[in-house]
Length: 318
Image 1 (cartoon, rainbow, N blue to C red):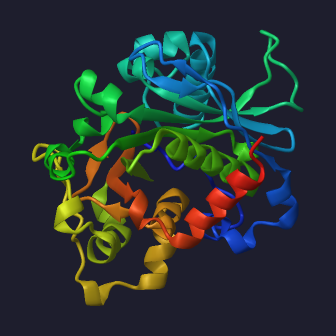
Image 2: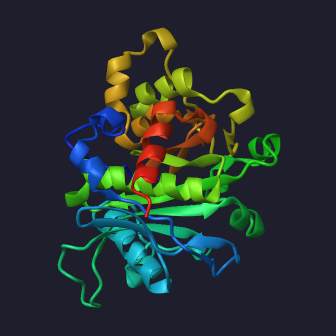
C-alpha cells in the first residue's frame, strides 16, 4: 500500500489529537452525513462494492471512484503530490502520463475526497483533493497478492489467520491546503464505513518516513521496534533482500518525547488507534522513503474509536 510520503497530513494540530473523539467538535460531528450505499459489482473481480457517497462534511464529500475517469483523477492527484511536489522519481512513462499509476489500480477501490465548493476542473468535475487506495483480500489473492508483498513477506501472517479478511490501505495523499482536521476525519470515517460495510478483519499497509538513510531515522525506528513491534502471531518481516534493521538504539537510550516528535503524523495516528509495526524497514528509492509495515486488526482498535465511528455512522445513516 504504500502510504507514501506523509502526505496525508501535515497540519498544525497533531494527527494523534485529531483522532481523539473528544477533540472532534459537536458542529463537525453533526455536519457528517452518512449513507448506506447501494452495491455494484467491481469491474475487476465481480465483488459487490458501494457506489455512492460514504459521508459528507460541509462541502467535502468522501466516496468511492465509480469509473475509470474517477481513477485517473486520483492518479493525477497522486502524481502531483508524490512526484511534482514530493521526492518521488518519475520514469519516462509516468512523466508523460502525469499520473501515478500501476497494475494494482485496476483491482483496487479508490477512496476520493471531493470539494463541491471548489472551481470545477476543465472536464467540469469537482476537484479530487484527497485519496486512499483500498485493495480487498479477495482481489489480492486472485491477482498475485498485495502491493505490500513487494516489501514484506505477508504469507505467514495471513496463513496464521486463515479465515480473516485483510484490507490493504495505500497511496494516501491530500493536497497541501486540505491537510487539516476536517479532511482527515472525513477520510477516516470513509475508511471505517468501508471496513464495516464489507466486514474486513484486518487493515495492513506500508507507512513512510521521508528519506532513505536509516541512520538518520535511528531514533524513531528504534522507538517503534521496542514499543510497537507486533507480537509473533501478527508479525511479518521485510524480505531479506530489502531488510533494514530497525533496532538501532538500546531501549534505555531512547528519548521517548523526541522519538514521538520524529514520528510522521500518519504513523502516530495509526499507533493511536491500535496499530502494530512489522519486523524490519524497507528503503523505497523511487519514492525517497523508508517504509515500515502497519498491521491493524479491527479487534485491536481502541474501543472509543469503534464506538465513536459506529455511533456517528448510525446516527447519520440515511
